[in-house]
Image (cartoon, rainbow, N blue to C red):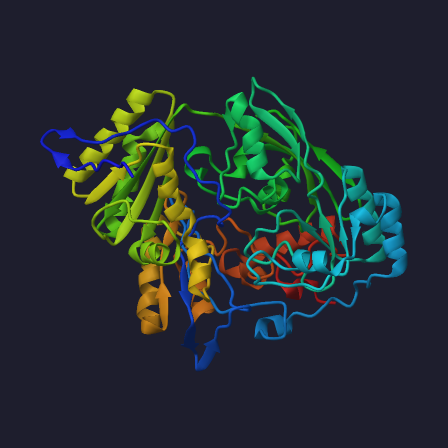
Length: 546
């Protein structure tokens, strides 16, 4: 591997830096965050034993202010009887059970058994989330091809009080895209057409079932990129991304989907189609209702079409892998990167030495790009239009950071293979965790200065009982009660970008006031009076108990 190292060398910096038009290896590892895994721990007089099937991944992602991402461990929760939390959650008796007449109706409107799935093997996959944390017991999956079919399905289900769960790529981490009990699965994967693209404005209009990576491939020859980039891009759907307000690797550059989604089409519980598919960046006519559906996890309506502002593809892309001695240096480096790299800064990711060791031990062909082992590592990506200008700007920034003592070592990728190997380390952490055994994740958001404090706090609290590690987006911003209380105390969010799902529905008060939650419940009851849309998710279960 030809990576030339840069270090202080008189008054110049030695590096070999090429512009890269595509950096990331096409991986389906999940989206970034700070993580940890544990095989056994004790809390409040109880001992929790992990097992390979039921252990629950929890994600910890920091995004407020200049927040960042963090992953940690957590006691497993499932829909089965093995969990005390799950045992408290019971099927709403007001919901009807599936009958043969229902299947006959769906066959009629969808065009036959090809789109009305009752096959046990296919249902086994659809009932289970990708990390095997959650498993429902649905007996039916519907595959609509058009918005009109989604409308007919929901209108019928609402009239029959049949609960439904919208599903796309099923790459979520909080149980939001799989049934809790026997809800009918509505998978929008066949709604995967690009409807239009304006090469002047960069506005893309597509159906909700489009896979994120396919959209990126469609845009590439046209000279544009999606404003969203995730490790799961090869399987996640844009409708699911919008419904969870996914963040990802480019948030520091392009912001959240609340800013880049210009419009959408959604179908409410009673089958009404809401056409909010605007393509204008400026439209101040009344309430901007699309924002109700961005991040609502399919609990207010099923997103069927999306209008999104794409970005021009930059010709110059560079990636640096940097070692830092402490987290304070990482914070200062972020501030300096924003100040000195400005308009070309496109990603700023971090991982600690525990995360690095995990990847090196469990993934084949991975090596540490820097020669010395350090406490923290940073990936800095820049994208711009001037190859020489961007390279010199990044080199000058790295040399300055080295002289200031913020950086102890580092390398700059010389070609696409080296850049992919850097991203492989960052995006391969979740895969390495899976290979290591049982682990637990969170998806929290905290002010950047607090991000690593919770890692150190948990390490002190758990001692040798757990290996707690931290990684994720630094540029965005007992175990379970303790972590949530800690996050709330520091005015963070218990869900940064993956939503609440069923996992955190009852924990919403750690981040939202009772008055705010009460208003959310009112909106839910207004748009979905019978509560058939993705029940048991997002909002506290007590509000919907019969």
